[in-house]
Amino acid sequence: MKLTVISPTYNEAANVARFVQETSVALAAIDYEILIVDDNSPDHTWLVAEEIARRDPRVRVLRRMENPGLGPSIIDGVAAAKGEIVACMDADLQHDPGILPTMLENLLRGSAVVVGSRYVDGGDTTEWNWIRRLESWIATKTAQVCLGVKLKDPMSGYFVMRRQDVLAVKSQLQTKGFKILLEIIACLRPEVVTEIPYTFRPRIAGTSKMSSKVVVQYLLQILRLSPIGRRLSGRFVKFAVVGGSGVVVNLVVLATLVKVLRSGDWRLSAASSLVAATSNYILNNMWTFADAVRKGRRFVVGYFTYLIVTGVGLAVATVSYASMTWAFKRIALSPGELTPSTMALMLFQLIGIALGTFANYELNRSVTWPTAVKQEVQQLQLVPATPSAAIDQIRTEQPEASR
Ligand code: GDD
Ligand code: MN
Image (cartoon, rainbow, N blue to C red; front, side, top):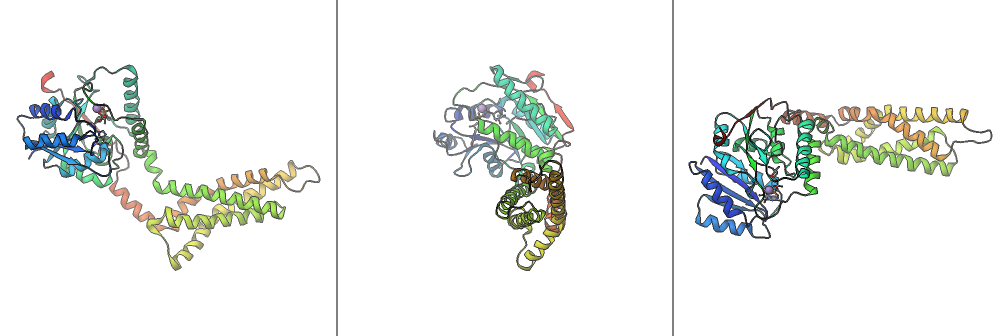
């Protein structure tokens, strides 16, 4: 079989029959199947689709019971597809099935991805009010600027690809968001992408599932895929979170010692930092570097390695604390007063921590948990660093009708 049209549905009972009918007309000359991927819709879309499938052997239904969502539905649809080419399109008839043959033709002529586009010449969004237009414009620009994507309609949910290409990057895709196309392009880095214009039609029946949650997911997706997001790897974020918890531990211990011993001595600062470093080591070993975890003897050796490596930062923190309290006493204290206020001491400690943190991540990553670096290098070879550089060639084709 040549083509599988994958159409995710959620509460589209009123649209699915007409969708199948219009798509079948558009594909009359092509060897195809239509795969409706339904998230067990409360309005029984799956049942309506199963009825259609009983009469039309070209229609199949995948009823999903777990992990609901537009992205996961498309990926499951691709996995279940029989065609060597897959077309993803909405079931609410907003995507014009009329351009499917042109899209297919372009794929066969050498494009890796063919996108149904509202924003190339000949494309349009009918009946959108200015707010909807502005929202779409902002979302599109964000993707183009943050990811360097040259696609005119990177938000499109309408695209045609080879099934094998999607499967090749499947394990790298984070499919939670609505915008599965962006995700696939970021991972696959296709050389030739073509955009085919079409008019995004108004919804005939049912309601859109676009929500503020979808928008937030989209923004997080952009952040994650952007060059900055890629550099701020999950591991560094964890390291920073552990560091943040260490700051709290450090300040609480110091405040307690200052109160109990009624002193602002630098050794109390050093002791607090040591307690914080110990809790940081344990948390980093369990969580940040869980993939390179140290156990038994290696845990103890790792602790001292961590202290030595972190010692650079600890020394910086302690020395800055000592110099600041010294300077403060000389400059700000009136005769008779012995120590700066607890608040001032906390501030000195915080500044010291900030100064001492810079070297910690890089040093510990490479010295204390070296196996983690090896794993990162392997991952880097799998995941390209800049998603967008790939799309150097974008072509626009006019559909037959408008030529
Ligand atoms: N299986 C499944 N699970 N399907 C879903 C889900 C879900 O959680 N949420 C939505 N769908 C289906 C809808 O039933 C519809 O067929 C399609 O996905 C698109 O959902 P809409 O709610 O109609 O989205 P939209 O019209 O606001 O936005 C669409 O068009 C835009 C322009 O191309 C989406 O395709 C966007 O991704 C796209 O940017
Ligand atoms: Mn829609």
